[in-house]
Length: 118
Image (tube, rainbow, N blue to C red; front, side, top):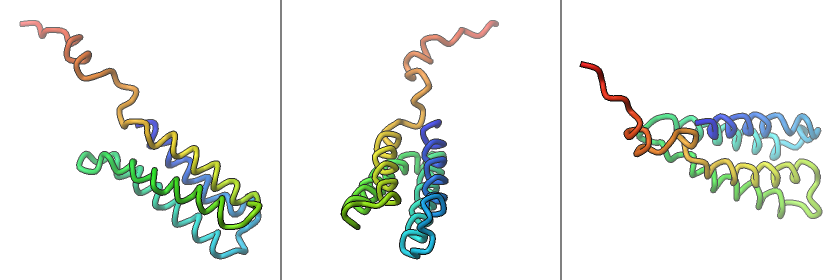
């Protein structure tokens, strides 16, 4: 589940970025970044719950939206929108990682179990 933690950390960066790039005066960028960050945190958190374990795949849609917003909102894109593009590309890579990527396959885990002693 390390991929979900990285998504949450990326959402924190996205929420802080309007203040870092000094664009907090633009209400659309500020509230857009905060709401997208909240959505990313929600989807990553829902992936921990078994019935919604694939919720992190919806982050792919959010990432594509961030890339398009950053690229086509203003030309040439200022630093805050360049950040949207980079964050979107990063999320595209991380959201594809399965929840249990660091665990060995199930067949291997069952094959290596030690028989219980009587």
